[in-house]
Length: 324
Length: 258
Ligand SMILES: Cc1cc2nc3c(=O)[nH]c(=O)nc-3n(C[C@H](O)[C@H](O)[C@H](O)COP(=O)(O)OP(=O)(O)OC[C@H]3O[C@@H](n4cnc5c(N)ncnc54)[C@H](O)[C@@H]3O)c2cc1C
Ligand SMILES: Nc1ncnc2c1ncn2[C@@H]1O[C@H](COP(=O)(O)O)[C@@H](O)[C@H]1O
Image (cartoon, rainbow over all chains, first blue to last red):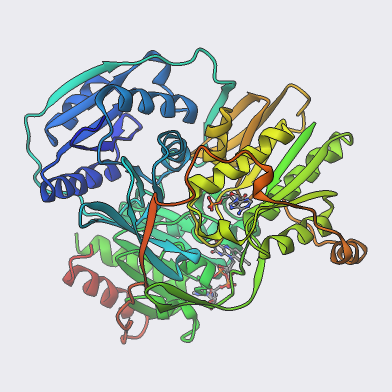
């Protein structure tokens, strides 16, 4: 059984729809329009207010309801999604953000549906009647384009690759769909804590201010935090900084850390090793600040400034403040 | 406790990978056991330190390259290894590969299966979750810590979920995928490397498995490889310090970046 729909699985963080969700709503509407399909947002768990907010942006909101869905867990999410597919039929496409939860539960559902799944996509498009994606492989050294021949096509999309659509205005309808869940999946959450309390989420941020070993000491990262604050951005770091124990791993950008695609990435005292660059080369605008005019990072930047980051950052903060 | 580790041989991080044609890549001949898979191996060895009776099996599926990943596993201290299938699996899509691995794992019946977070070639991060789904067992991706209290019944583990760290408790069987931080791979001792070079790597042909449920490919169709978009030439700030900071902000403002 099929249905002529494209589903975006919405994400809520700290009580709000994430920016990636908005981006994907825009992408789904475009894909749907091109093939005369119905775009819909899926809310797994989530509250009525979020359903209503989504309905102002997309014609159909499917709210999957079960009290067991209040906190995220891969097995439960996979169950929920599978049941919705059984009830409504297979949509053409199911997509969500390639965050830590998206890449965890989506492959499970794809396996159960015996259908194609592609992760960390940076673009989605139609290849004839088949949904297709572009995605980095070999750590981003090359890209591949894949079409998915089976239904539904499952995609997880890197945050930040699509623009936030400007004026989506709808009076959509909300359908609430109750589902059953297994009593016990074998997994129990015993504790949750913020690793970097009060900090902005790196993978969602529109601006990332990143520091490397060139920042000199852990204390100097306070400077970066200030710069991030005036730019409403998040702080990221290189692996050298994590290995030195200066900053926690959850802030690491790169091959063995997070992949970010912000509008603006400012690299301070980072040499630009390939492993680092692979995590940020999809940023729209890159600024590099480095003492060494030959640093590799300048080859991956739009704007370069040769200088001492510790001197330049306070000046940047001043310049930003004086102009706003 | 029975532990299975799934590993894959992939191009080294430093290896040159270039687009040769739409359908073909030029890959420098420098292959290693995938970065996160070595972490997975080390995590299994760490459990064995606390539970010396544990049996660890490392499995790699695919063509001849898989043998090298398994030799690496032997060098690192794993005694039982299996080379599953043959070159034909290199053409299979991720669902089928996971299915083959899962069918083999059904026979081994491990309590804990450890994969890498994602393989250094296709970067899918899909095999682990897919194997777990097929086996109908829970899984946790990108695990950063495993409790040393692991016993025959349950284990505690930590993972990052969008800016938070979650501690979970799970029964066995369980599948996890290894994130950086879970374990620190060690450098193998020379004796083990010698042993690994001579080791017989047992192969399990696909016809020993009961594979008829799924077709081998057809879910994903590669249209083409493309070159990553290139950044335009960098614009360097010309003013001396401290004016260069204002100059930079000027540029960013003018171009609507901030
Ligand atoms: C398998 C593998 C995976 C890896 N994964 C990652 C990853 O995910 N992320 C990552 O970042 N790295 C990763 N690395 C490490 C990577 O190769 C580099 O070693 C690392 O990125 C270097 O960090 P850095 O640029 O901060 O330090 P360095 O290379 O030491 O560079 C410091 C830079 O700061 C500059 N500098 C010094 N003082 C100042 C100053 N006062 N003002 C301005 N500039 C200054 C210097 O000129 C230099 O360019 C990985 C490596 C391997 C082998
Ligand atoms: N051919 C294979 N043989 C054994 N394990 C594999 C194979 N391919 C992938 N895996 C495992 O699955 C993980 C994720 O791979 P991938 O889904 O390709 O990103 C790897 O880190 C391995 O642990």
